[in-house]
Structures are given as C-alpha cells and as structure tokens.
Amino acid sequence: MTEKIEHIGIAVADLDRATELYTRLLGIPPYKTERVESEGVEVAFFRVGQSKIELLAPLHEASPIAKFLAKRGEGIHHVAFGVSDIRAELQRLKAEGFELLNENPKPGADRKWVAFVHPKSAGGVLVELCQDREKDDDHGG
Image 1 (cartoon, rainbow, N blue to C red):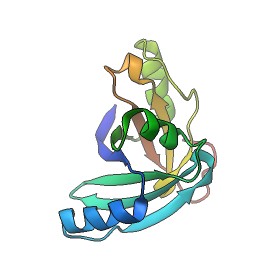
Image 2 (cartoon, rainbow, N blue to C red; image 1 turned 60 degrees about the vertical axis):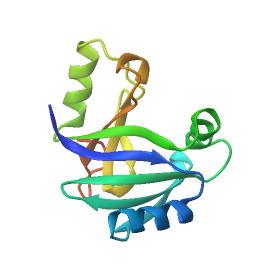
Image 3 (tube, one colour; image 1 turned 45 degrees about the vertical axis):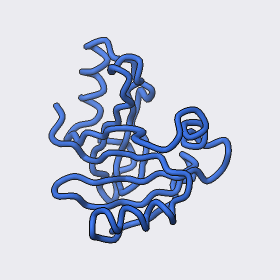
Image 4 (tube, helix red, strand yellow; image 1 turned 120 degrees about the vertical axis):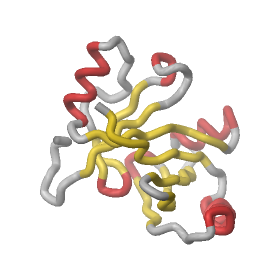
C-alpha cells in the first residue's frame, strides 16, 4: 500500500540551470545533489512539505533521461510513491496485472530502494516505488 507521494521526478537538460530556476520558484535551495551512475543521471532534491521534487539530468547520451528528453523534452518524468514494504507492493501490483520494469528493488537516489511500473500499464505515467534503505540493508526490504 502506498503511504505518500514521495517525490515528483522532472527531467531537465541542464541541472545547474534547472536548480537555479527551482531555487527561485520554491524559495529554497536543494537539500541534496548526487550522481546515480547506474541510472546515468545527476539529481537535485528539493523538499516541499512532506514530498520532494527531484530534478534529473542525463550524465551521457545513453542515459534513459537523455532518451526521454530527446523524445519528449523537459518536464515531468515520473511520480514516486513511498511504501513501507517495496517487495510486497511489487507482488501486489504484479498480481493486479501491472507490468513491472523491475521485478526486484534496486538502490536509488536519496538512500532509497526503488522499482518502476511501466507507463503503459499505469495510464501513461511512469510510477516509481520508493522505500527507505537502512544503513546495512543491501537487499531491498
């Protein structure tokens, strides 16, 4: 069961430019930036109440974000929902007939376990599931 909107992911071509824009828009600086080499992105996170905005910029042309930008341009890339048991939620969604892009969670940005639901089975929206990753947890729940 989803517990909250964890974050909204926004694809951007230039992270520095977008970070400056969102800093002015939200009136706060990002609380964190990091590179996620496994996904080919650099990200910046802003806290907005109980949720976050994640700006994602490609590190190279083979990055999924680079492909997204080439096809659709800048804009909302995904909606992430926080869950307490990502493995159970993946099993529930699979049983409900959703197509999973990840059968198992993988390490993501901001110390989270993440997994994605294919947009074609979620009304055209890329859905990300996120679970907090404990310091010594290396198996996703």
